[in-house]
Image (cartoon, rainbow, N blue to C red; front, side):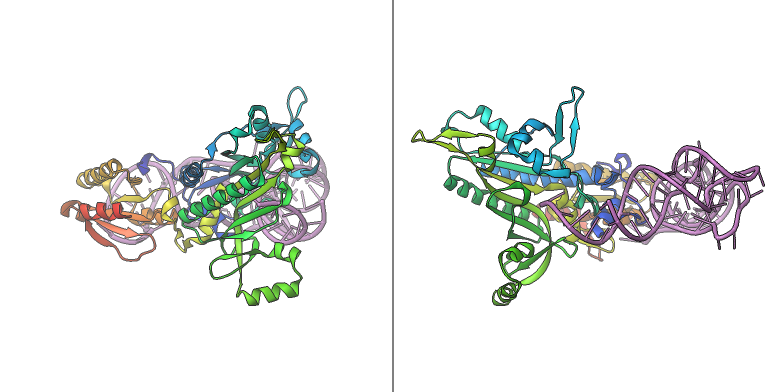
Length: 419
RNA sequence: CGGGGUGUAGCGCAGCUUGGUAGCGCGGCUGGUUUGGGACCAGUAGGUCGUAGGUUCGAAUCCUAUCACCCCGACCA
């Protein structure tokens, strides 16, 4: 990509309607723009980050044998009436009618759709277990959306569903997903924790939450040194406050704030029962299927990652989700043909080596360009002017470092390949 | 839904109390001088002041209604 023909939307002034740092920086760095309350468009830089996160999730889902699908987001009321949630889900469910006055809702979650999908096509227990996931927008008509993309009405979620002949199989797969989730959050390079949790409106009897730790988190967590812990809200329902104090002392737990970015549930037969999804097992005994569901707030992870990684200059992306690996910053290329062609050459080399690079060939001053790429959080900046073009070197500056290092192109490439 | 607040140029804001037909900074464009961390000078474009109605000779300003957005709370991934 070349910046001269790539839509960037950085701003110099702080946006007025943002409170928390991630929201401010996402607007300022031009990752998103608000469309209406709780709804955002992803601009090129923001969408690249989203895609990076999606791909990590995809790889780990595929690795445990969960298959990607895509389901329609406008869902008929009949299925929701069958599960009982047409009544119980409340105002958060956005309902609408089509031209024939048939009732629909915009999917906040997809248990009904996938249960219906599976019951139509499942013929034998031998086809089990089934594991499928999708990455798509969900709509929840929140009472009060806030903090930008953190609590949006329309957001991107990965939702996986599993179907099993018995609880033992569900338990195994629950562990598989747990494992995959740990891999995902490790690869995202975020400081996170997994806690026991309540399963809320979704139902079932066992669930775990994954939280990214950040000051601005909305959840209160009690965590030990290994980063394992419990959601305080859940602890309160299970224990008396005196007992909680005792547990905190005995286990040396500390209070931290978390942003919930993942939640996995054992649903049991909640949906298979209400929606009549059953099958004969090896003994010809008819069983309701055991189900699990596994969510990750993909778009929320962007905000969570920023809450955890920023400084006064802007975002500092973990390498795994940075929109670009490297920004080549050309100094006055429009006035200096040798600088321009030298940059171009380096840019081509990087492209050939599959380095995710953007060449800043805009007619703008060095300071402005550096400020932009620091704001956008690009981990590596390569500065090239007359000096570098003449000496066949590059100047490398890492995001967050103050000093700049002069390198040969070979040194630079091997440095990149090492990472 | 209860409480608080804000809508004026692409972004950030002033003007409103005390009505006289809109201004500042940043950004944009043009020209020149600069040039290795947000340059300077000159010029220039861009707003029916959220919307509708009312009061008035005259409304960004006063009154009424309405919409949108932000923050706190209940709720929630």
